[in-house]
Image (cartoon, rainbow, N blue to C red; front, side):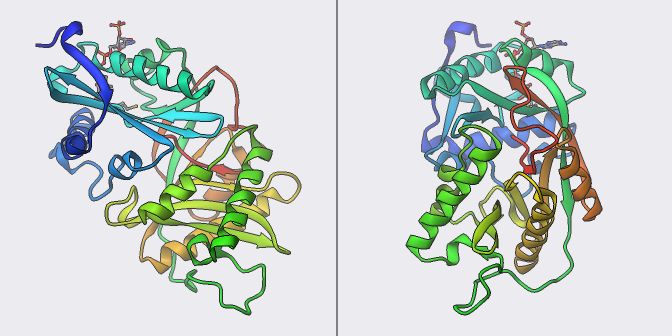
Length: 325
Ligand SMILES: CC(C)(COP(=O)(O)OP(=O)(O)OC[C@H]1O[C@@H](n2cnc3c(N)ncnc32)[C@H](O)[C@@H]1OP(=O)(O)O)[C@@H](O)C(=O)NCCC(=O)NCCS
């Protein structure tokens, strides 16, 4: 078995993606005691599209050249998070995750990102203890919620003479309009949390063809947006519209803007024949309650851990969807 010295950590190679995906499924499936561990995540892929995204670094742990684990490190402007972190079960408890986490912290340092977080199993002393070693502190629960929308009018493209307040998809806009919309998304998130910026994530979704960005407006001003992953090979897979991130402009009326965003996401999911999956931290109390009122039910819950132990954008006045998986 590996010794600390024989384990090396470095960037994950393209040729290792398939094996890394296999380890992700096997590790989680084993931990969760699934009858067939490889079934974990079904047709969803949390690794390959992220590996292709410029705002993400995927690192690998190897023992004598054999891939034995990986971690995915994501940057949203001033905020970073990591996961899925996985180690081949036969290598558990040999310090492999700790090696991957040392390399992860070095990436955050290189990026100059000082505020970072993660999502993990709330019931697992082992997981919480591992991350505490690296300065993370457990906070509020994050609920991963799902809802299968009724068939509604599909949200596809805004017709040329449509009213300016009609929700739309980023992919249907002209190049100039897209740039303006991405800048408006950045402005919106920076008003919620200093430096929070999804621009790179948004561009990656369009470039990778792994979903679309739902945009809602009021009198021509961006009210809210959601990064929705769906389709074969994406983080949502064919059956799920995974809202990886969503946010409504803060200030007076934010709750209603958030409701409208949920409606627009459901219309998009419905047009794709998919169910919506969206995570919300329970510190965002009104956002969570509004999701419950919309008919969302929690399918899984975990705990968010942050470094430093601060609120960040897990606050009652933040109308944000995300889960940091
Ligand atoms: C979770 C996982 C990545 C850990 O990998 P690993 O290589 O076995 O972890 P390591 O051996 O590096 O970590 C050991 C550390 O865990 C922590 N730990 C383990 N058991 C613990 C306990 N009962 N209480 C507190 N901390 C504990 C300690 O910090 C320990 O370090 P120490 O021995 O120096 O104190 C691995 O088990 C895995 O792939 N699980 C399935 C997928 C998963 O759950 N991923 C994480 C999702 S957030």
